[in-house]
Image (cartoon, rainbow, N blue to C red; front, side, top):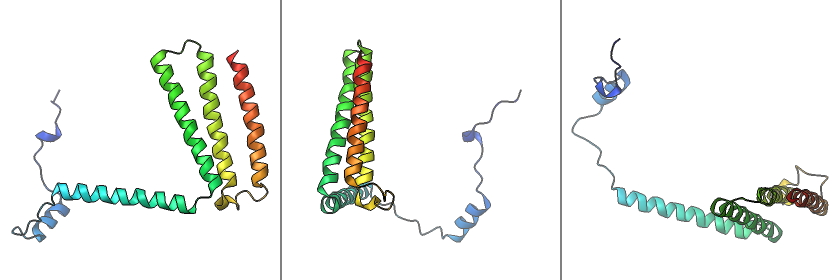
Length: 155
C-alpha cells in the first residue's frame, strides 16, 4: 500500500490565477505590514463606539415599559444561571426541585419574551387584534398555569 501524502510534503505550485497576479505585480513594491498594536487599539475603539451607540439608542428610543420587561428578562437569566451553578456545585439531590425551578425560570423567560414582542410598538402590524392589556392578561394567565404545574411537579 502506498504511503499517504501529506499537504506539507507536496511541492507548492501556484495556480494560474495566482501566478498571473504575481507576474503582474512588480517585485520591488511590497506592501508594508500594518502595525498590529494600532489595528487592535483602533478595533477596540470601534467596538467601544458601537456599543456606546447601541446603548444610547436603546436608552433614547425604547419605552419605559419595554425597559422594565428587559430588566425582568435579565433577572430571569441570572436566576437560571444561579440555579444551574448551584446544581453543578452542590449537587441535584432533590432533582425534581431543581428541574421544576429551572423549567419555571425558562418558561417564565419564554412567556416574558412573548409579552415583549406583543407589546412593542414596532410589532403592532404583526398583532393587530392584540392590545397591550390583552397581551398582559394572557401573560398572567399563562404564568399562573406554568407555576401551577411547576409546584405540582416538585411533589
